[in-house]
Amino acid sequence: MSFLIIVIALIFIFNMEWFTIMKSGDMEMIQKFLEKELPVTLFIMLLLMVIQNLFTLIPIIIIIMVNVVLFGFVNGYLWSVVSSIIGASFSFILYRYWFQSYLLRKANPSLIEKLEQNGFFFVFLMRLFPFAPSSIINTASGISSIKMSHFLLATTLGNMLYLGLLSAITIGLLSEEIQGYLIISLLLAFIPSYFLYRKFKPGGTGVKKWKVKGH
Image 1 (tube, one colour):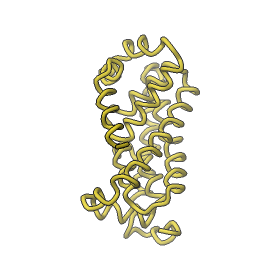
Image 2 (cartoon, one colour):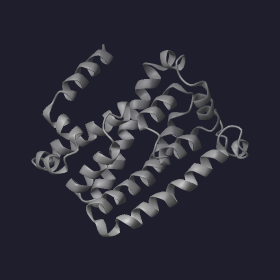
Image 3 (tube, one colour):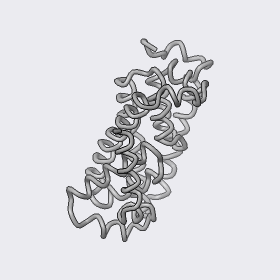
């Protein structure tokens, strides 16, 4: 019953005007629409982040950009981090307690094995990897045996770094003078994370050392 209520609510949301405007990516139209009332705007941005963590229908860079434009760099970044943690937590709980047995049969065994062997570090590094959708990370974590406390800590630390970088990129996109420096910073941030992932994945040299107890 609770699942049916959420599905109906999501269908209703997907057909609302503000959701269509957000998907368009038109920053001027989005800003005019959301500047009317702060509480409503905060709730909408939270809801969008929850949806992004469930299905990744809207690129996260758009949500970050809207937050920074509406609330300023610091407040926009902080709200992005807080809402992303709420969205990830909701997604984790949803997949663990509603769909774990069903999705586990269809999941990639290799991905689940990596998660269960290196829970905290795997989630943390995947949060830093720009091509890993949040919804996939949340789904895989929810149906695996990783502890929720490890998932939340890794998500918090990873998102603080990754969303901070995206917020800086947003400022760079709005100010062309520093755009080149931000692109270089992006490369410098993600290249090490890729090599760390290669090192600590199952079969790598650092797996036993960093294996999370209890998995």
